[in-house]
Length: 413
Image (cartoon, rainbow, N blue to C red; front, side):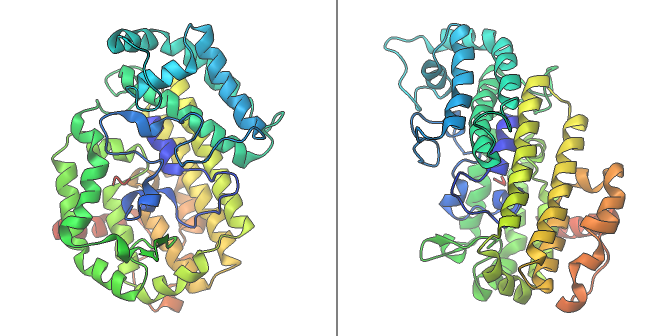
């Protein structure tokens, strides 16, 4: 389930899809628009939303015959399952409890699950290395198309892992807390906090169109209302997490750190005018911005695949995860600097630095990069924003987190 979460939180651009100016974390934390939620961890007790549908994928885009890379990657999974005695369509039916594709008449679901779990290790070792070797080779020279294809593979295998109880912290093959019903519904429960305190979807969309980057609202009135209610929102969300053992740990493994999210929102609420001014510029991503996102997507999806293959522990997983996130911060900031105002980019950069999970903020190997480059206070353009505040340090983040805990205080997702 952890890998399914990582891949979903990244959400690579599909061929022909514009880039998104916001990193994975915030979109998980504030999913007011239903369009944002497609493809992320859903609040259902069955993992149907994590599987690639046939012949239509989760976002409803029909796989074209011309997408040779996608078809070749699908064929790898199909052949590996077929060599183990199972058709890919049957696998999807079993993993999704018959919601993706119907189960055979009179099928014994329990027996089929047990059989698939028995072949799980060999199938994973068959699929993942061959899939990773396709990146940049043959028909898969387009990173965007390969990211899309690989993401479908990761979703299917992570759902298989979840069904079989693999990859949990009480096994030798992963680091996810043991699944329980409240973890499976955490997404819906956290999203429900918005409605409970009076935050509505129309605060984040305009004419049914998503406003990219509208984390605290689409305009000044919406943002002001959000910020005025953020204490209640954080309190509701924290109650959800506190009342579900393992939920916070699970979300952390998707890149969502609740205390970091609270700290990042404080940055935006302290500078609503600059936040609103920047929204218009961030609506259209440049080629450089899209390339940064695609590079991060590639790294995250590959990491998700390798975690399934090798059962990486938390330390090894986060070492790579944090490096990818910080590298993206540097790339993204540079790309937007060439398009948007220094004040807007500075606010966005400070927001995303605060949003980094504490595990990443405290990673000793990243301290110099964070302090001197990616999250240097000079990059926050506070003088242009006329905002006072302490430099980005671990101590500062801790103080903000304690403040928001007193106030209360996604998924995320």
